[in-house]
Length: 304
Figure: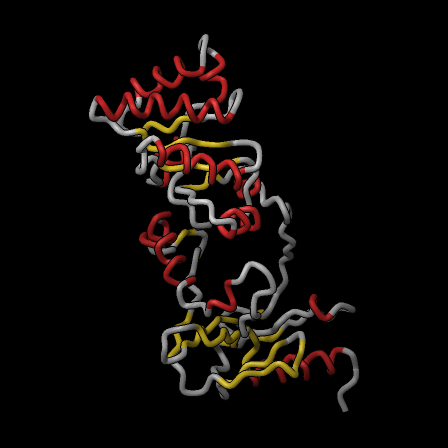
């Protein structure tokens, strides 16, 4: 879902139909008497997907050895897919490696970078002008490096007895961020005529939408009129009566990834900036916002 085109995890590839790719390890090179022997052996067993890791010892010499093997493969009608750099100044190394590969005539041999990459490092390398074919992102993606825990709590938003009417539930807290939203909730996503997203509305399905107007629950001065815009309702049931009812097509990882890409394309570019992105409008339906305010006032004994 995060945008990866393939995985080095063979089990993940088998279970979720994700394309599998990868390179040899440093230990492969170290198990041979010389680096170039290791490269030749790997090229022999992987002639159609040969990516050589060049930084086990000296990176510059590693690139030279990879070029030697790449030219040998070219003579056999084969192709050195890429070299991989896993240490050092990745930006500078990638630029130098591209020069060396091009000077040797290996114009279609790509460059793979890895080593604790994240979105900030990748952007910096791209901005430097380095021509990188693919990025090996591992540690900082798999571990949620900058936010290892996702806080979440279970709260009631509505309750009912048997088939009786739903009753609102709201938890009042000393922190505005922990004040819950009452009702049986769903989300409408609104679109501009251009196809770009206009905003999301949280609403109570039992009350409907009286006014297509949203209010930011954290700042009531932030409001947006969504009247007349096209919308879709987002939430799908996962389970009912103890059984999974999610549609089969939603369980396919590649379909989910394609959907994610489609949705990202509907965000304005200003909202996709890595640094200081423009905030995306999300709010409570106007009537729901004021209903919650009234409930809180009643619970705190502030209503007249």
